[in-house]
Structures are given as structure tokens and as C-alpha cells.
Image 1: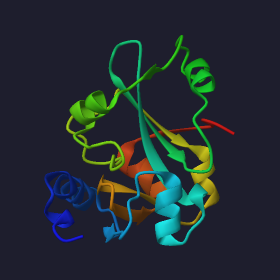
Image 2: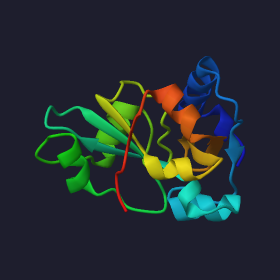
Image 3: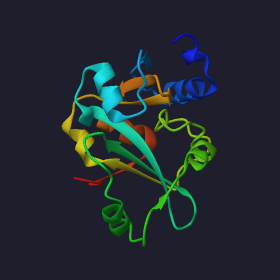
Image 4: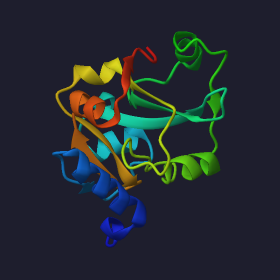
Amino acid sequence: MDGILEKAAVKRFKEAADSLGVKGDINILADTARTAIDAANGLGIEVGQIASSLIFTLPSGNPLLIITSGRHRVDTELVAKNLNIAELGRADANYVKEVSGYSVGGVSPLGWISMPEIILIDEALNDYDAVWAAAGHPHAVYPTTYDELIQCTGAQPMIVGD
């Protein structure tokens, strides 16, 4: 796992985290953290403690970031209804990389190259004292809290799934 901390995306995350006063350090996992289950297994924690950064498109074409608990899937119809929009668009890997600067599997909620139009955070993450999010690479994660994620991202709490 040599060199992960030297990757441009991880450095961008670290710079953003430092500027925002994030307390947790980057942890490098031996196995990939591309999925919430992979990350939870690698950390020895509940899958619900994984704060996955999922990207959708809004009717404007701009990105919507949903920081969701790994314990469930985002209910796109529910989220669209709560945002008073017709539907959420699916974002492909190229769009994700273009707007966030991160590759799928390593998308951090911090350090984006262009800010999402809307950022939501899953209220289910508040059930845990500590949660873990990606730090710019599929093998890099960092510990944080629900409150710290809100403070650092300005995310709006919402029930996004069941």
C-alpha cells in the first residue's frame, strides 16, 4: 500500500481536512474499501458506520452529494420528493471524477474540485459515535462524526433511505 498518501486525490483530501480542522487521521486499509461492506470489514465495524459519498445529478445538471450510511440504499424517489424535484439522475464514473476529482470507491465528502449544488447527510449516521468516510482513494479512510461531517460540508440532514 505504499504511495497512497502521495496520490493527488488523497493529498487534496488531506489539505481540505486540515483546513477544516478535521481531527481524524487517514487510515490505509490492506483491502479495498470500494464498498461499504468492504470498508466495514477492513475496519472491524458495523456497515452502518460507513459514510458513503454518493453522487447524483439534479435537474440543473449539477451534482448532488448524499453522505449516506452504509446500512441502506438511498431511496432516490424519497430524496427527490423531499427536494421538490421530479427525479435524481444517475451519475456515471466519468461525471463523478469530473465534478469531485475522485474516482468511484474513493469519493470523499471533502476536497471536491467543484462544490455540489446540494449536500445531504443521512440522519442514520447520527446513530453512531464514530463514522468512517473515504479519504480520496479506495484504500484510504478517515474517522469522523456526524456532527463533524455537517460542520465541514454544510450538509442538510435528511432521511434518505430505510
